[in-house]
Image (cartoon, rainbow over the protein chains, first blue to last red):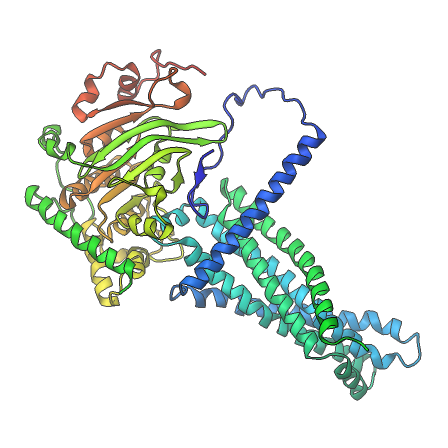
Length: 296
Length: 316
């Protein structure tokens, strides 16, 4: 089988197998169950192997050469600044919804009302802030990245970069990767802040919980470690979103339909990756915490 | 100065030297400011009067190149030598593998088997960095022009210089204007975006961008497809002019016989692999332009005459 040049620069889509003319599709025996399993397993391994290879190339280019002048700032603006409203709004309402939902439960037991702030803020900072910010960005930024690069692929602009002696991974992907990795943690801080603010506003102003008590218990239960874990998670999520989305765009085929498919794949795969990574990172940080601060 | 920039400067000075020789040997024809070439159609005899260009050392060589996508062979055992300074047209019907052939030459598609030699060196054995440097010796004009749609015409044409030289902006601007003037485009297009250009203008901007680093080899993928006859003639004139003025080796992939007759010294015809007789080579014609009308091969004559008719031999 013909191989594309390094980093998938070949653009020719796989043509139909000879003998399958439009008018008379050949009768094919349905493959066996095990054949389907085998094919899917191979496809799964090949796909994630390709993602790993793509990631290695990004890292190599980041390590060996600075990004081109003029490519960083526009990407930082697109990915960071233009995401502020959606991330801020999402964070604010998540905090408010959490306050509404948890208040009813916490008021069933005497003395638990003072724990409301701790519960809301811990949920936001440890889990919901990073995961929701990353999910929103997978939808807003990931799809856009895949569609943009996919369009460049099918209009041969990526091939044109190769022909002009410019590595498209370095020119196109590295700035987007850096923007996601650097800015998603900052956007997570924004989501956390707005969520904490929203939860506090509803709890203290609407439900009448005493403000000092709300913040005092929160301060006792949430530490720097929680914030650090949340930000580390969001950094990994940012890397995953950038890699998956750029990979999907970079390898899109089949015209407008292919670009649409790449954008959808970018969001779906990024979302799944965020949840899977969240689980394993949760395990990792919990284990690390137990090692660093063993309970007597 | 980075290694890339050194290579680029070497390339620029070498190409300028070649160009000087070519200009001295062949009177140049500059298109008018409106972009319409006033040059008369070149006589075939003039092309044949430069046989030394056809027998030079091979700059590019394909050895038994096979490209397979899935179960389908697109190119099968294609072998070809392209001497330095030659203008070669690769013609053939749609789907015969012409564009794949061109992309194999510049390394956008890696052959399933066989070798592509540039100055005797197998390009697919080069390191990625070295191959990127060697790519600066090529210029590629895409069928769709492949301009960067987020950049203006000026930024598109200046792009190669910004990437591979440390020239200041004033020098780059001067060079861009000079290059656009050479292909008959004025300053009014500088600020326009690709979406605002006609097909012919896009092709010309694509040509200008490809020529910015003064390549030794120009590859053209269907340069006149989708253009009206007048604009097609302008593009053909520019291709020919580029070849003659700068002494650039040209490979033009096309199914347009007018383009073949206007720009080519040598013609190669590819035939779809699926229709070949067993054991037959995929290049069914390789000769001088003048031989094209006298070939005994019915398939070539059929293509040249543009007749589907009964000559068609379809095995599948």
